[in-house]
Length: 309
Image (cartoon, rainbow, N blue to C red; front, side, top):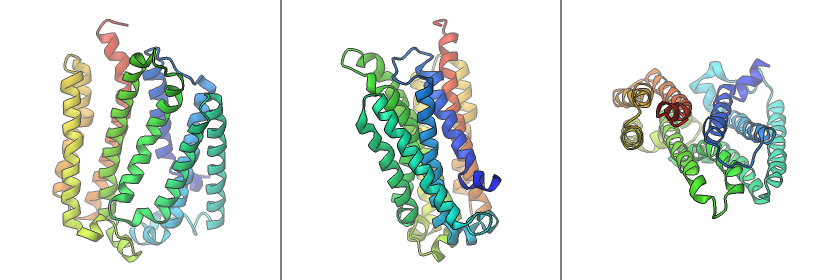
């Protein structure tokens, strides 16, 4: 059982669950936004999302056996603790469950076409694992977009079905803020993917991949990661100055838990040389992603602090 949990990368799935729950209940529901999903249908959305994500993690591990044998042999599961046949069976089963649930959910909110979103995400995850992952930067961009979609899908299924011209001014700010978080998740994951490619360059090269550090060299890829890492720093500082300047608790949280780790990770990128350096940076960005998600808890507190709730 533990092997299967590791195969589907349960920690990442838990992060998706936390993000979607906070978007729904700490953000949409707390501010009484008009939504289309009751608790049961929201749970179905979460289950569908993690099924598709888990299937994506499995197929990624199946295709990564060769590179992982070189880069992280102690963490290889396929062919050791789990047979390839079982892994494929789990991959197909989870995809089928996720797509069927999304089909039901799409019909329940009166937007049958939304079903195609999960189908396309499933196909994209397979294409990423089987081919696109080994291309220069495009694979990094694709998987980062799919991470952002795990947030946006809540707004797509919960807000868009009930949005009409009459209530659009009231509901648009919720989607706008959700897009801000999705962009942040995209950027953080993009940097982390580049860092992971630099960390895994030896195994990827032997597997015939053409990732950014293989195409341009480790040093140039590190410089690109450093340059990209400046973008979320500037974006978060702008966000704090523009929207949170009067909320001191929120400013303190963003400075301590997001901006400071971002600056620390950027400095570490510039001075990294060895595999364990890049692994440390990757872990920092994962924590930054978590702290970014948890910042959704600040919105009710900020309103209470301001005396409006």
